[in-house]
Amino acid sequence: MKIITIILTLLSNFCIAQSWHKYSVGKITVSFPHKPSVGYFDAARKNVMVRDTNLYSTFILKYDSLKQKVSKDDTRKAEKIVNDYLTDFIISMNGYIDKRTTFTLSKTTIQELKCRFRKGNVIIAGKTWIFVNENRIFQITNYYAPNTDRDVLPDQNKFFKSITIKE
Image (tube, rainbow, N blue to C red; front, top):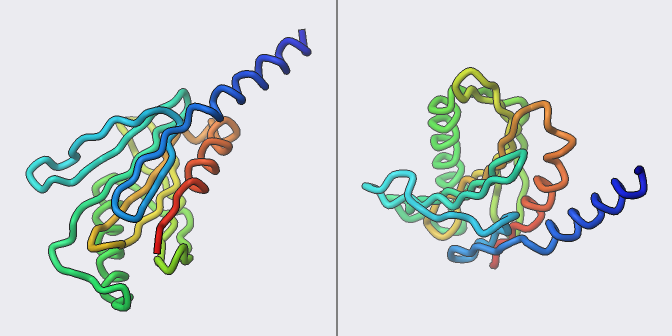
């Protein structure tokens, strides 16, 4: 019985690994576990949300055009935009930040958050990247029920490692 379980696990991992779908906007490319749905999260402002859900978690890419242009070298302006967006995001989700770090990917400064927020009566955990690129603000998120960490982390790692930003 144990051998059958191992074989089924290997086969399911093999099938899952081959089903990832790329989505690109501007210089940003992200891979999703399945073909994601694309729509507006605010149709009046034409903010786009790309979304995919699997058994344990939800994967989201949201982006919105900025009202003011931000040059590549204007890091302070980009940082202020990201911080304002981040504050609105956490407040709107009734959440809190467990951990916040900053790093650079292809000359783009990214705020990474490990956060928790309430969805109905359930506390949801998540990882989010927020950054400015090509006069758009991007939010890339994976959220899940906190007790499913072990099941979520392989796909979450693959999701975030798939993100590329062309220079």
